[in-house]
Image 1 (cartoon, rainbow, N blue to C red):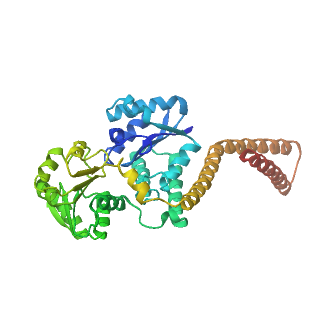
Image 2: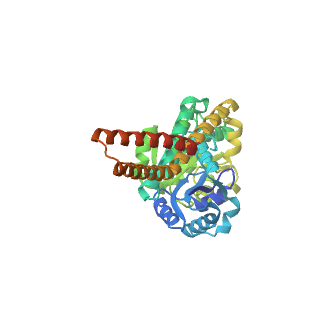
Image 3: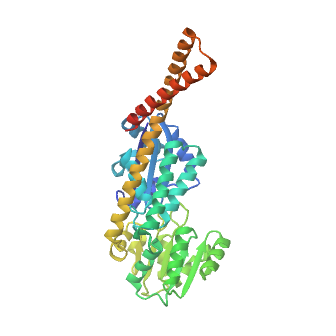
Length: 398
């Protein structure tokens, strides 16, 4: 069996392509089972975040199953394979393992060293387990990836500081608005990403924080947690008119903030600028908003330049993390080889034991020995067999 990875991320595909494959956690089990049903596919797990969509699979032969997986993915997502084929990256065996370990360590993130990805990899493991598409190999791969991510954060400088997209949102807002002390921010959506962004904005000295969500009770809970005020979703117009920064990240797979909504709000703001940050994939903000005067719209692709300038990671920290990843990948490959060798060793031991018993029986049939002599003969045969097997086993593992 071979380990194969097919996927795309913020480095290989623009957001308008990534959002075609993005899938919510509630729909992941269905997609996992659809891919698992592909002939020749034995195990499947998917890491789906705002910046990546990656399918990890155990297949009977990587070269022939690649096309089958791509077609199954396109069919399951209701898109044409031509829409994303040229953006896909394919990795096999050691390269696939190394990539997942780097992902879990935060080395492949938009914001190198960010903390959320480790939890997302853990979620991918549990969702695949619950969907029944995980076997021993992928389970071992993901568990070791999580161990690697934790060690990188605990034992290298890459884990120092609270690195998150919330910090990037603050940098983006300051780039346009300057000091945020007397500013107002509006959160649309109350998921994990938006809560992190809201907390970072509050810590930057923000004056007011407004929170809007389809379910008003959840907006109230998050507003209380962050020291803000809840806003009814059908009263967004006033919130947009009051806000200086709007951060949007909902679970909806479609536009929730339309061009017309923002144009209407800007009519009540004179020339006061508005920064809108869309942290969702699929995008939640109409791209046409970019054309509105005094509005700055940032989506996930736009944040790359901000990260490079305001949130660089020290080269020494990255080198230390890469070294640890390489060590952990080597350990995983050793485990994988031993796992693949185990059935062969078991068969060898079984065959040797059968031969031992047959030869001892032949000797006992020809000579008359006392019970203690029979036991001594049997013990001698066992000792010789085990010594020979030890040497053979050592050679095979080597």
